[in-house]
Amino acid sequence: MRYNFSEMVDRRHTGSIKWDVKDNELPMWVADMDFRTAPEIVAAIKQKADTGIFGYEEVPAAYFEAVQHWYATEHDWAPNTDWMRFVTGVVPALSSAVRRISHLGDNVLIQAPVYNIFYNSILNNGRHVLSSDLVEENGSYSIDWADLEAKMADPLTTMMILCNPHNPIGLIWQPADLKRIADLAAANHVTVFADEIHGDITDPGYGYTPFASVSDAAAMNSITAVSPSKTFNVAALHAATLIIPNENLRNQVDRGINSEELAEPNAFAVPGSIAAYTKGADWVHELNATITANKQLLTKFIGKQLPKLHVIAGHATYLVWIDCHEITNDTTALCDHIRQTTGLYISAGEVYGGDGHHCIRINVACPAERLEDGLNRLAKGVASFK
Image 1: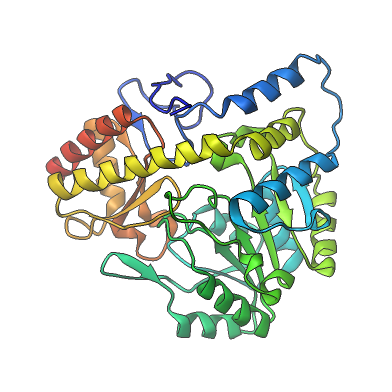
Image 2: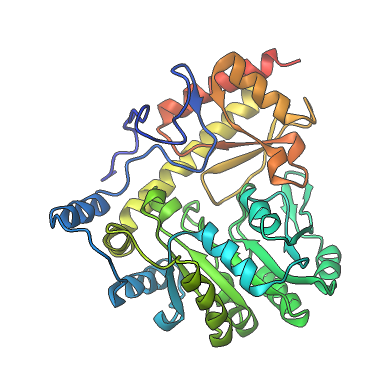
């Protein structure tokens, strides 16, 4: 490999949220990788730092052209740069869109179990969470289409947040599923906000499909959010892009991101993002091979050492969803016990809704040596759990 994904970087006492833990603890919870970002990004940031001047920044055309280049070369979709808007993060942009696209008391549709912050963006803005829960059977999840259609048709449902690929279960939505969602949404006047922040992290041989690319109905009735943050481990750059083909919808969103001051980049956001999207492809391809190997290592270990746990097979994200129903329906208690007895810090599934109360989520984006430590701690904690 050209890049080093085995380096054991010590991130303690660096201001890292993930690593704000006790000395004996091993965090494998929040979606933050333990790999150094692509050196091409570091070089671009250093070059910017060398100017020594960090005044107000604007977003140049080169930024949007870099986003277009990335999606054309990596995902076979070349969105028009006129459709794009820079924002300082997917979550603040989502919350702004909720305020602009829906009304107080409306339903915002989700598919639980799903990224827990979606709930905050809905509830904190006076809207109601309406979940069409995904259905798990034989280790894989699918949509209950009758339920989804009924909840789309509810007159109070005005918006849907789609997680594509789906966090925490790692599911890559197929084009036929996305097209069907788009048709239902259009028929029921429901605007889709597609969070595609995990789209670049897929197993070799698998790729994700951008929601807006599947049909005109999808494109004209959606807001797509993308970012280099998860892909390149640069969340603190605070850079993301909204892609909105529909001009009227784009104007609505514009008013929100401008009035709420979500469109002003920091000094390193633009050069870091341009470097990522124009020079980072090889790094991402090697990263994905590393993450796939780690997922295989985890799956093999659990199958042999923890046969009562069941890994949900997903081909996207560096987050692994594990069904623990054979040992408990309260994984909050399980995760608390594992942390107290072994120091391993993982995510209990209840916060993601749906059937998450008997599941856990583990972040495997770390050197294999660190993952092996975490798996040994997991086995020890599960063995002693009563």
